[in-house]
Image (cartoon, helix red, strand yellow):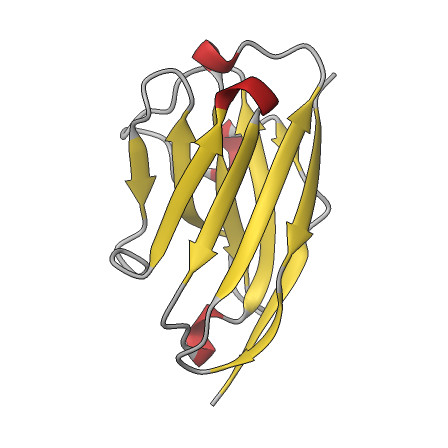
Length: 128
């Protein structure tokens, strides 16, 4: 069983920055770990934000966050950090860490039902 523990998030004004982190524990081989973030705003469907294949570093970003969100990871600790910059009110959502024990793929990375493990979520609120 894999557990995901998130931290970070909070409230900022538009243009501000935040850092999120997610640590995965359990029997995990980082070479076959796809880990990242989805978000869900009130009344909207879950949206894939970014995922990273820990084995090869391939990273997939949603178009809406490219250039503003960046990731870093520690394979030894199965931990992923997400730096979110130039935040906009439309970034307001509950952010969920997700993981699945296989390499990410461009063909399915943004589909929520592909991910086996989900964190409890952390709120990001951006005021205008």
